[in-house]
Length: 147
Image (tube, rainbow, N blue to C red; front, side, top):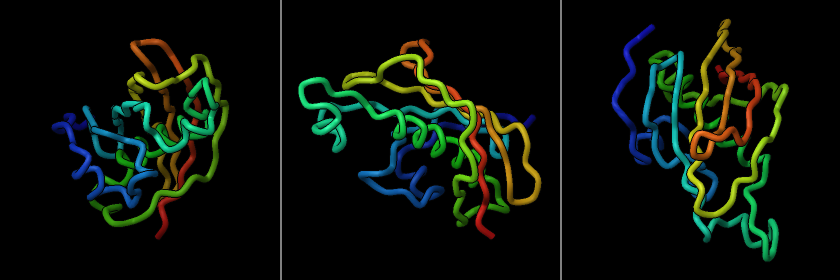
């Protein structure tokens, strides 16, 4: 296993991922082993664009955006590999996703993705999202790197 690299700022993440605000759901990467593992953070701020309508008076981060944040973290691990720089990593599958905790304003998501299998442009990773060590979501994500 490669030694983890230094942390990445939002600007450095933008150099790897094509996503931009308001859809870039990562604030920083705190651990990165390209092609193997990533740990990233997302602070859920009260002014997030999706919270006013989900739900009025009871803001909750939508589960689909938690999954997207986990996928963006995984994409950093995939696209930080030299051979994948400048490419797109697209969803090819979402399996076994379970939500275990509500995520609300003020929470900080820690997003982890461990790549388990990569064959050519297709790969799979086990991803989790936690808040203060409590599991918020988990699942297996399959991706395809656009050639």
